[in-house]
Length: 210
Image (tube, rainbow, N blue to C red; front, side, top):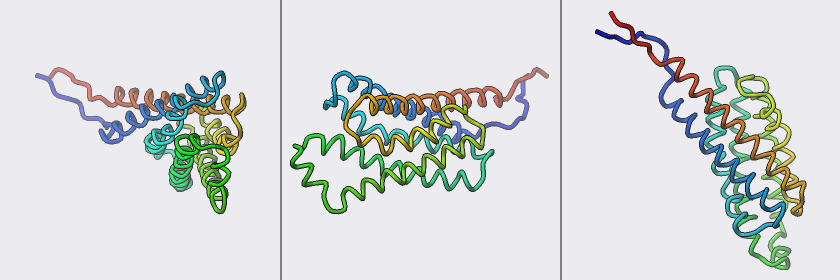
């Protein structure tokens, strides 16, 4: 007869969260990079604005899954960084949604009227919180050494720059930044997926005949 050997197994909920986070993170990166590549040749269109508007929402599960994966190697700093980054991503995502699916369809004169009073400071504040959160969480990933160093450094450096420069007029610089951010998210997603798969294989109970 056969009986399984006992060994520590990755909690199913954590494994599921990692896989979902990796899938949505890859989708978020794709929805950022691909439209930016098209816009480098065509400029902004409705077809490119829609995916850019919704892409931040798909990065939320990735952020939580990354923190769950590296939590054993981190401390309170990473927890705080994760929370700040979540709040910043929510604010920045809302600003991106409004910019790409609302303001995009307004005439320049209407936009000048809308962007008055506290609107501009509020948008800058959203970008600032997002930039600080990305810098902190990127630093936490660098310190934890769980994920590849290149995308971890990219998260800490490129995403804060992206938060402020993405508001500039469309150019090769802004398109390049979008593509780079998308690549970073897809790289981290791929690393998370691979780690989850390897952990599941390593902790699958072996079976021996007795």
